[in-house]
Image 1: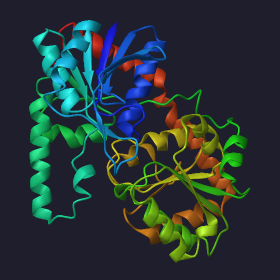
Image 2 (image 1 turned 30 degrees about the vertical axis):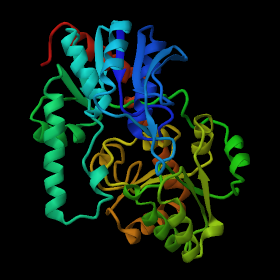
Image 3 (image 1 turned 120 degrees about the horizontal axis):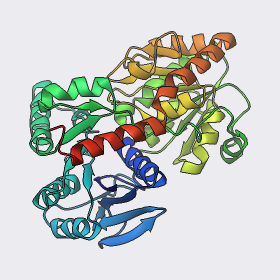
Image 4 (image 1 turned 90 degrees about the vertical axis):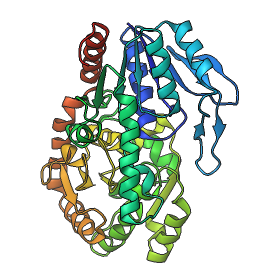
Length: 390
């Protein structure tokens, strides 16, 4: 098949939708499909290049100073470039990843050219309104408007998916549209318990002691401050280290918080971790934590599970689909440092239970192998091309 993926976020953007798009495009190309991606360019010019086996049509974009690596596009002025890319590539199917400017323009152009369009939604209004600190009634109004805007776009597609059953259940009432649950998938060959810990240990000078790991953006909705407070409390009872891998708007505040809590010598802030070092970093850890409250699946938790780690996560949105409480880790009350601290002590003081939970993580993640995800998307595309699923 000739598959064109349109996304408003792509390499080198650091977020779940970007990583999903990158990995899906590569997996499709590796399986023999002809694949192209329309995404923000890395400059103020439209570009046409190859990234491995994937063709990349870059739409002129501009940097956002407050968000490292992220670039944005202007509406309307991108329409001609996107139409040209679609006409040049001649896809059999267009797969949009959200409902913002690039995806919206690709949808409209493809429909005019008679090309079927499918969508995967990674968007939740909470990811935006979390930063605004507005009264509840205003936040709810913004959510209604945001979902209504998304629905206007997605209703024009032939079929829709979301990464989890929870995400489908959350979005269907808002979008009033049938959806399939298709996992983001994980490369179990790349992320596994046999990976060498040495590269990460050397790069970040990690101590040889039990380690708790967080990987992701250091932004407000990830609630890494809750993890730091829980870590400081648990450290009075068990000896372990905390690694916060990633960068974001909250990085400076989190470093100051670590100093205030008196645990700065027990915490490593790695900054941005190159993709090639991630498997080693997971392998160097003993437990993974995710305190975010807006996770529609959580790719980093899946990577940790594939490495055989127990997972601690907030009891919110789709995390309970991955974290089976008491089996491969523990769920804690969102925002509760006290609850998380108790779970940390439980994991790091019981090595036998810790290893059992790691083995259970491997069992659970097996059904999310990227090969299975790829098969589901191939069926998704073929059905849409044939005129089914509307």
